[in-house]
Image (cartoon, rainbow, N blue to C red):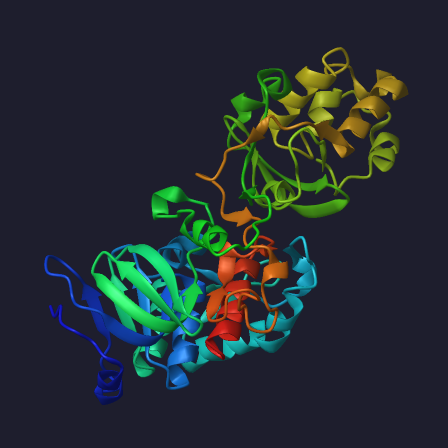
Length: 424
């Protein structure tokens, strides 16, 4: 595999059906020159590379892992929830909620769907506008690689960036594990802190601080929560049980399933609410959004069945037994016909508003994304370029824009990648 010098002119001589992957071992190349250097080979970086390359810019994408798009490959259970047809600025968290509007309006879910359809990738809608590949997330990675291929993008895999220096007002010098690169544009697409086992690092945040850019506070998001031993009240014993529920925090509510785990709670509704939750705050769960308890009282008033057995007709049996043991042990085995209204009301009110104070979360190891990052006030909302450092761009998860669960973060990756790729 070649380890020689690659200059800008040679990109224009490359056949359009050829893409260069450099996996360097041994000898380092000398300094190379590119118009655009993109650091990070995930969703945002790949999209940006393709768009910049199609403008005729010479582009190199540097990825420290052995392959591209690793988080794309594992997303959606291997089928990649690549966008959400309902994506709008209202589905994103940021200290500046208006920042994402420009990029999202200029590259929409329909734009990405059109690209997917161009490549003949079949897909389907699950719940709440979430789109998944019928086959495999590998199709999305291959599509993006092909887009880059047609634009003459070069990939340097298994290559780490050791330093980025501003040499003049119009150029940067990057020192990598495989040599130096001169460029006029550097795009940081290194992602957040979530899932470190997939290679996540704080490289983008460190670089932002190096150039004087502010970072907003960061935390794991779309992440399972943990409970204290006293809060668990035996719920760890029903690990694996799921319920249709509403999880709310800070006035925002999500109705999807929740899942009891050995350490606490997970499932889509919990993951969504976790992005809004702060340590010490209460999270409120409605465990029975489908039930009219007043009507149930009238319907079952003459029944000889116990309260626990009546509830087991509407909830998983293991959950019913555990919840009643924790909050209604004195009346759980009482025939419904003899049930005191006060006790029934107290239990059903708790089912509809179960207040918990999480002990914490399962951290970045289990978080799908990171809330916070490069302060959007430091960037142009139209181009993702730093307002302080000309030619320096930040895109994707490294920026303080975090989407809901369900394809929204991919849509931000595509949109911010396009925004930077159109000008870098």
